[in-house]
Amino acid sequence: MATSVRSGMTTWQRLTRRQWSFLAAGVVFGIAQILYMGTLWLHSALAGKEVHLKPITVTTDLGKMFRGLEVAVGKLLGIHTSIYGATTDGIASTGGAFVPGIGWPIVGMAIGGAIVAFAEREHRSWVKYPLRLLGVSFLGGVVFSYGTRLAGGCTLNHLLGGIPMMSIHSTVTVVFMALGGAAAFFLMTKLGLGKYFKHQETRSYCEATDSGECPTYDVGYRWYRNPWYWVGAAFTVALFLVAVVGGLFDPEGLRHLDGGELVAFSKSVAAKGWLYVLGTLFAGIVAGVAMAKSGFGTECALVSLEAAGSMKKKDGFYARLGIPRITRTLMRGYLPVIGIAAAWVVTGAFIWVGWSLGAQPGFEGSVKYQLTAGSIIGGFLLGLGAVMLIGCEIRSYMRLGMGYLNTLIGFIGFAVGYLPFTLFYEGHTSFLENTVLIDEYKWYQLLAPDSEPTQRIIYLVWVLLLAVFLFWLLRRGAANVGVPVHDLRRLNTEELELAIDARAQDGTVGGVPAPEPVPGAHSLR
Image (cartoon, rainbow, N blue to C red):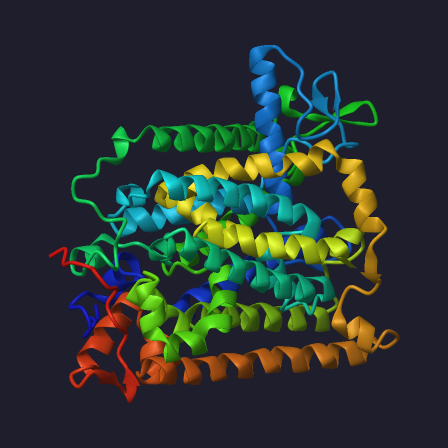
């Protein structure tokens, strides 16, 4: 077996024990999207239904999982509940916001995170967060999940699905996500929490660097003595346990009413079959591995687009704010955007091929996918909440599997954030229906409403432009951090920091000033 010249590890050991580059993670995430869309394609074709190409979505299914937990607890306590949807005799009716169900990609992403933690021999329970940050994470979860209901989906839906689909409402939502993320970034630095902005925590990096890079590392910290860890873990385990039991065994107590008859647990084996369940679960696992192997996410990509130039020119300013050096390298190198753009290209190419073969692009057919005032308000809330969470919702699922404390607490906030929508479901639905700004769903429909061949040409040009954008990001990002392009393609962020240090003998890296240390930091070695 070949041995890596960078670490003395075999290729397999590098793949399993080390983090990946953002480019590699983005490509693998795009493959996860293909697996998911391919599963839905095959499932629909075998059932004789029209095929719609629809990338991974999760937030509606998360609401179904919360509803399932509510019903299960109500049954256990012998009480009738109606928080997450309308009820008839204590069992959710299709007339409410959510029915009990499961999102297999959500379960898969958590499993993917756990697989990476096991392979790297490092569960992230060692990562220590102060109580103040846990409170902000909880509020971030509340703000974020409510934003998903207004915006018709989460950051995964809009940035990793809607953008490569040329969705009009996702484009507008992403613009306001960027504004919300910038506002939260400013807020967090004012609260003195900017030092916790990290895409990923690894013990090996923290043991070899200083406290400015790893404020979460404390050799005396014992996670199992922290009561908040057990609160978050208990909630998460209960939620996933009910969902998986319902999804596999479809107990009568978790079914819902439809026309007076009990219907199977939403997206259970009984409702969808093993092909759908195993295919979407596996797609989620692959996506979770990609994210856990890099810290891949959505909101940091938007912040990177906004802040890369500023962080290159004013590195000392951000250092004084406490932003870790590795995060400044990440941002000014466009690494998160590179991962996102790679996923765009892979996803978009598959959609174009599928469309050419007769499968219709999805994300249309209801007000949820149209541009409304909710896209603007919800988009801002998505960006705000994602940064407060120290990572968007899609990262949260894999971080649950990796054992991050702030994510366990933020996940409870997700459940609370759904409440305004579910308690006032009809009012929210009416608001969205009465504030539609553009009727069309996709930009190519707006540009060529009466010609599908022209629409396909426009879409192909879009995918090619995304590929050009990815190429530009690699070249520009490499120039911003002062390393060759191939380093940005193949190295994870920690290795990139080592490469920068190796080239910084004269205080510069390829003509670019090396990042400054965080003031007041002390060595952990």
